[in-house]
Image: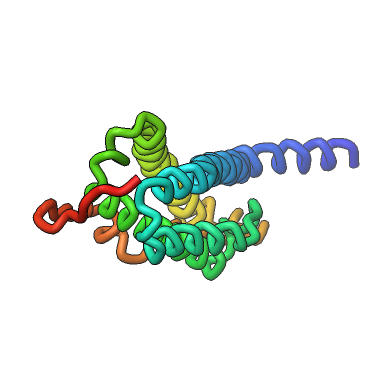
Length: 202
């Protein structure tokens, strides 16, 4: 009986070490870490928005529609309940991506408008905020790409034999990847027309 128990334990250890369970767990943790960094960078951008809007408002208060659009887009982003489990819910992930895409578009429109105000463009605070925003957008892109790569690696492991058997046994499903609708349009730099610039106001 003792020999049988020892044999069963040894077989279990060999099975678990070769079944991919540990790899799946490590990759799942990698996804959580990558997602946390995505959220961190999006939060960094959201924190910049109020200062950016207030600075622009000081020079271009008449651009109410654009300023309101940015404020509303940021509020929509803030209204989404973000949790680590979001990475397992394709619908919630899609809503999050759409809200972030709307904020990206609103910020692009705001930056186009600021081209019409030379005094604003020369303001040190605005230049600093713009630089921070550009840096944050770059960090968002890097963090998002790392998250997508982590999900791709995990999903490949979940769907590959023999780890797919382990995944089925422990109910580890493929995870939805993070996408942004109309990402090509968001990534396209806004066109600036200097032809009809209004007189700058303070």
